[in-house]
Image 1: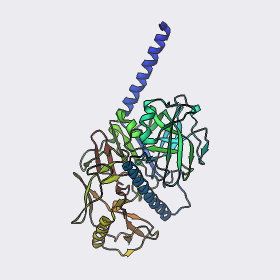
Image 2: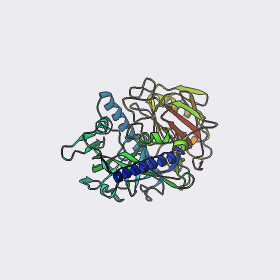
Image 3: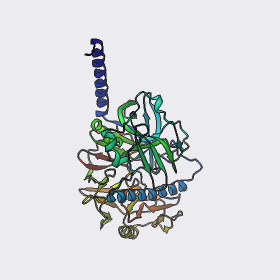
Length: 449
């Protein structure tokens, strides 16, 4: 029988734990917002002042193509019944600041709607890529705890992050490899994750016992300027899914356009702060794909160019019955089947006025014009199921140089992706409980909280 003192201590401990969880829920329930920093922003650790704007665009397009190949490979593996992690090496476009552990250890990570696991490099490093920032040390955190092999948690993660058991120390481990031969291996653990809210008075919201990957063997094409990845996909270990009870399954982002001032910052909101409502909101169903839960899939029915409506007949994504395009913040271009792209570009070309056609200096995009105030682009609307989203010229054309603007769509028969150029200056809201995706035209350079 426990002594009165022990009983009292246990009661106080339980009371403190419940109080902390109540505070976390109360803080999160009101919603919170964090900054999203574009990797090419002057405030990003990835920023290279020696790169020209054209070089940055070229690199962004190359990442789009690489990302599409990775998505396609992940879906092909799912169809075969295999486990192929959709983690990204370093092809995302936006970064966010998080902290891990107690005391909080700051990490600048790629925010990725195309992957699930939250992971960072960890000491001791048996084989780690060079990282400019300090590496997270689990031994320095009082809240770090590895997940044991003989646990339901380890078993349940096998299909999503390739978890397996090591006979050496009984710790649940993960391993992910990518098409470019990059890889990450390490321990599955639970740890406190802290986010700094920028909505209203700045505050920090801590979430205990978040599942993370602690990578001890990471090599390949990872950039030394990044410290990890925050998965924002729909799988069970993503940040948004793990925060689900605290945020009501809601998150949204507002991406500033590439033409915005260098100091303009995109935002990522959770909970009530993420609700997209009011005049001008267009909402379409999110279509769950049990074979590949990471991706956010919707049904695109057509695209109108002026008065010409072009039906969209993209192949279905994964095992969905009607979903035919992935919505992704980490892909720059919008990728569509080549036959649809041919019809779309012809319709746009026939209605553009005031400027001469030219070529993409990088050689990637096929429909380009001399940019300037005389360039007049027809109205273009994306018709999702139940939602008509009117696009601006900045959603449709991307400046690839000071004098050239090109159609920000690309023909690709492997997978269709609604990219971030098409989403800029929209509040894009995900409600994972109602399974909806909402778009609201918004000046994302203005704070709206």
